Amino acid sequence: MKNNSTWNQWIAPIVVLVAICLVITFALAETNSFTAPVIAANEKATADQARTELLSDGDAFTQYDGELIPATSDGKCHVEEVYTADNGAGVVITVVTKSFGGDLTEMIGIDKDGAITGVKVTKHADTAGLGTKAHDPAHVVNYVGVKELNSTKAKEETATIGEQNDGAWYITGATISSNAVHYGVHEALAQFEAMGGEQ
Image 1 (cartoon, rainbow, N blue to C red):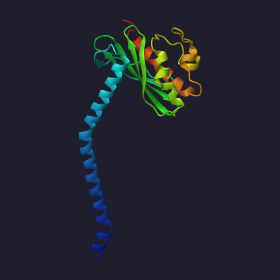
Image 2 (image 1 turned 120 degrees about the vertical axis):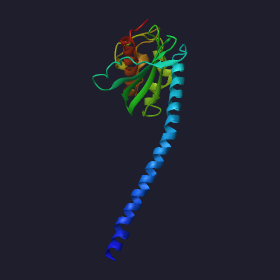
Image 3 (image 1 turned 120 degrees about the horizontal axis):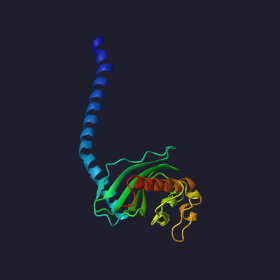
Image 4 (image 1 turned 90 degrees about the horizontal axis):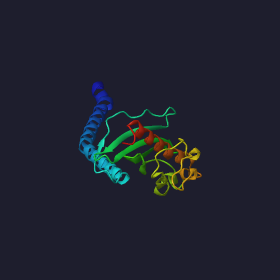
Protein backbone atom coordinates (compact mmCIF):
# COMPACT_ATOMS: atom_id res chain seq x y z
CA MET A 1 0.00 0.00 0.00
CA LYS A 2 2.84 2.37 0.84
CA ASN A 3 4.49 1.82 -2.54
CA ASN A 4 1.24 2.56 -4.34
CA SER A 5 0.81 5.76 -2.33
CA THR A 6 4.39 6.89 -3.10
CA TRP A 7 3.81 6.24 -6.79
CA ASN A 8 0.57 8.27 -6.84
CA GLN A 9 1.89 11.16 -4.72
CA TRP A 10 5.41 11.61 -6.07
CA ILE A 11 6.51 9.47 -8.98
CA ALA A 12 3.43 9.59 -11.23
CA PRO A 13 3.20 13.42 -11.26
CA ILE A 14 6.93 13.69 -12.06
CA VAL A 15 6.61 11.17 -14.90
CA VAL A 16 3.61 13.09 -16.29
CA LEU A 17 5.45 16.45 -16.08
CA VAL A 18 8.55 15.03 -17.79
CA ALA A 19 6.37 13.56 -20.54
CA ILE A 20 4.59 16.89 -21.05
CA CYS A 21 7.94 18.73 -21.21
CA LEU A 22 9.26 16.26 -23.79
CA VAL A 23 6.14 16.61 -25.96
CA ILE A 24 6.27 20.43 -25.79
CA THR A 25 10.00 20.48 -26.55
CA PHE A 26 9.48 18.21 -29.55
CA ALA A 27 6.55 20.35 -30.78
CA LEU A 28 8.60 23.57 -30.46
CA ALA A 29 11.55 22.00 -32.28
CA GLU A 30 9.26 20.87 -35.10
CA THR A 31 7.64 24.31 -35.33
CA ASN A 32 11.07 25.96 -35.42
CA SER A 33 12.24 23.64 -38.20
CA PHE A 34 9.35 24.88 -40.35
CA THR A 35 9.41 28.57 -39.42
CA ALA A 36 13.20 29.22 -39.22
CA PRO A 37 13.77 29.04 -43.01
CA VAL A 38 10.77 31.31 -43.65
CA ILE A 39 11.98 33.84 -41.08
CA ALA A 40 15.51 33.74 -42.53
CA ALA A 41 14.16 34.24 -46.06
CA ASN A 42 12.03 37.20 -44.92
CA GLU A 43 14.99 38.78 -43.11
CA LYS A 44 17.19 38.35 -46.20
CA ALA A 45 14.51 39.88 -48.45
CA THR A 46 14.16 42.87 -46.09
CA ALA A 47 17.95 43.32 -45.94
CA ASP A 48 18.24 43.03 -49.75
CA GLN A 49 15.53 45.67 -50.15
CA ALA A 50 17.40 47.99 -47.75
CA ARG A 51 20.66 47.42 -49.68
CA THR A 52 18.93 48.34 -52.93
CA GLU A 53 17.55 51.51 -51.32
CA LEU A 54 20.97 52.49 -50.00
CA LEU A 55 22.92 51.69 -53.17
CA SER A 56 20.40 52.08 -55.97
CA ASP A 57 23.04 51.51 -58.67
CA GLY A 58 23.69 48.02 -57.29
CA ASP A 59 21.94 45.27 -59.22
CA ALA A 60 22.34 42.35 -56.81
CA PHE A 61 24.51 41.80 -53.74
CA THR A 62 26.93 39.12 -52.57
CA GLN A 63 28.28 38.81 -49.05
CA TYR A 64 31.92 39.83 -48.77
CA ASP A 65 34.00 36.96 -47.44
CA GLY A 66 37.17 38.95 -46.82
CA GLU A 67 38.46 40.30 -43.55
CA LEU A 68 36.39 42.72 -41.49
CA ILE A 69 38.12 45.42 -39.50
CA PRO A 70 38.40 44.64 -35.78
CA ALA A 71 35.85 45.96 -33.31
CA THR A 72 36.83 49.33 -31.90
CA SER A 73 39.07 49.28 -28.83
CA ASP A 74 36.31 50.83 -26.67
CA GLY A 75 33.96 47.98 -27.61
CA LYS A 76 31.28 50.39 -28.81
CA CYS A 77 31.29 49.59 -32.52
CA HIS A 78 31.90 46.69 -34.87
CA VAL A 79 31.31 45.92 -38.52
CA GLU A 80 28.88 43.02 -38.71
CA GLU A 81 28.82 42.28 -42.43
CA VAL A 82 29.58 43.68 -45.85
CA TYR A 83 27.75 43.05 -49.10
CA THR A 84 29.25 44.07 -52.43
CA ALA A 85 27.21 44.98 -55.48
CA ASP A 86 27.70 42.33 -58.16
CA ASN A 87 28.03 45.02 -60.83
CA GLY A 88 30.82 46.83 -58.94
CA ALA A 89 28.64 49.82 -57.98
CA GLY A 90 29.84 49.76 -54.37
CA VAL A 91 29.15 48.14 -51.02
CA VAL A 92 26.58 48.13 -48.24
CA ILE A 93 28.08 47.72 -44.78
CA THR A 94 26.17 46.76 -41.65
CA VAL A 95 27.57 48.17 -38.41
CA VAL A 96 26.46 47.68 -34.79
CA THR A 97 27.15 50.45 -32.26
CA LYS A 98 26.24 51.12 -28.64
CA SER A 99 23.47 53.69 -28.39
CA PHE A 100 21.32 55.06 -25.56
CA GLY A 101 18.91 52.11 -25.58
CA GLY A 102 21.51 49.43 -26.31
CA ASP A 103 22.71 48.05 -29.63
CA LEU A 104 21.93 50.11 -32.73
CA THR A 105 22.25 48.44 -36.14
CA GLU A 106 22.64 50.54 -39.26
CA MET A 107 23.38 49.92 -42.91
CA ILE A 108 25.59 52.30 -44.86
CA GLY A 109 25.78 52.38 -48.66
CA ILE A 110 29.10 53.47 -50.18
CA ASP A 111 29.60 53.80 -53.93
CA LYS A 112 32.68 52.67 -55.87
CA ASP A 113 34.18 56.16 -55.50
CA GLY A 114 33.97 55.99 -51.68
CA ALA A 115 31.04 58.38 -51.24
CA ILE A 116 28.18 57.50 -48.91
CA THR A 117 24.95 56.92 -50.81
CA GLY A 118 22.68 56.37 -47.82
CA VAL A 119 22.39 55.50 -44.13
CA LYS A 120 19.54 53.52 -42.60
CA VAL A 121 19.06 52.47 -38.98
CA THR A 122 17.48 49.02 -39.12
CA LYS A 123 17.30 48.11 -35.42
CA HIS A 124 17.47 50.10 -32.18
CA ALA A 125 15.99 50.58 -28.72
CA ASP A 126 16.42 54.35 -28.47
CA THR A 127 13.80 56.70 -27.04
CA ALA A 128 11.11 57.49 -29.59
CA GLY A 129 10.90 61.18 -30.46
CA LEU A 130 14.25 62.02 -28.87
CA GLY A 131 17.07 59.59 -29.62
CA THR A 132 15.33 58.49 -32.78
CA LYS A 133 15.77 61.99 -34.23
CA ALA A 134 19.38 60.97 -34.86
CA HIS A 135 18.24 58.11 -37.12
CA ASP A 136 15.53 60.03 -38.88
CA PRO A 137 15.94 59.97 -42.69
CA ALA A 138 15.89 63.79 -42.65
CA HIS A 139 19.01 63.72 -40.44
CA VAL A 140 21.02 60.80 -41.86
CA VAL A 141 20.70 62.26 -45.36
CA ASN A 142 23.44 64.67 -44.20
CA TYR A 143 25.92 61.83 -44.66
CA VAL A 144 25.14 61.36 -48.36
CA GLY A 145 28.14 62.32 -50.46
CA VAL A 146 30.61 62.19 -47.55
CA LYS A 147 33.87 60.34 -48.25
CA GLU A 148 35.72 60.96 -45.00
CA LEU A 149 34.95 61.71 -41.37
CA ASN A 150 37.54 63.17 -39.01
CA SER A 151 36.07 62.07 -35.67
CA THR A 152 34.15 59.16 -34.21
CA LYS A 153 32.00 61.65 -32.24
CA ALA A 154 29.26 63.61 -33.95
CA LYS A 155 29.74 66.82 -31.94
CA GLU A 156 33.50 66.86 -32.63
CA GLU A 157 33.19 66.21 -36.37
CA THR A 158 34.77 68.88 -38.56
CA ALA A 159 34.24 67.33 -41.98
CA THR A 160 32.30 69.44 -44.45
CA ILE A 161 30.46 68.71 -47.64
CA GLY A 162 28.78 71.43 -49.64
CA GLU A 163 27.19 73.84 -47.19
CA GLN A 164 27.20 71.34 -44.33
CA ASN A 165 29.41 71.77 -41.31
CA ASP A 166 29.80 70.13 -37.92
CA GLY A 167 26.25 71.10 -36.93
CA ALA A 168 24.91 68.64 -39.50
CA TRP A 169 26.13 65.60 -37.58
CA TYR A 170 24.71 66.30 -34.13
CA ILE A 171 21.18 66.40 -32.67
CA THR A 172 20.85 68.45 -29.46
CA GLY A 173 19.38 66.31 -26.69
CA ALA A 174 20.31 63.08 -28.48
CA THR A 175 24.07 63.05 -27.92
CA ILE A 176 24.47 59.31 -27.43
CA SER A 177 22.24 58.39 -30.38
CA SER A 178 23.95 60.97 -32.62
CA ASN A 179 27.33 59.55 -31.67
CA ALA A 180 26.15 55.96 -32.24
CA VAL A 181 25.00 56.71 -35.79
CA HIS A 182 28.11 58.77 -36.51
CA TYR A 183 30.49 56.14 -35.12
CA GLY A 184 28.89 53.51 -37.33
CA VAL A 185 29.30 55.64 -40.44
CA HIS A 186 32.92 56.36 -39.49
CA GLU A 187 33.67 52.63 -39.16
CA ALA A 188 31.87 51.80 -42.41
CA LEU A 189 34.18 54.22 -44.22
CA ALA A 190 37.15 52.60 -42.46
CA GLN A 191 35.96 49.17 -43.62
CA PHE A 192 35.65 50.43 -47.19
CA GLU A 193 39.21 51.73 -47.06
CA ALA A 194 40.45 48.44 -45.60
CA MET A 195 38.88 46.66 -48.59
CA GLY A 196 40.97 48.70 -50.99
CA GLY A 197 38.97 51.91 -51.07
CA GLU A 198 38.11 53.73 -54.24
CA GLN A 199 38.61 51.50 -57.29
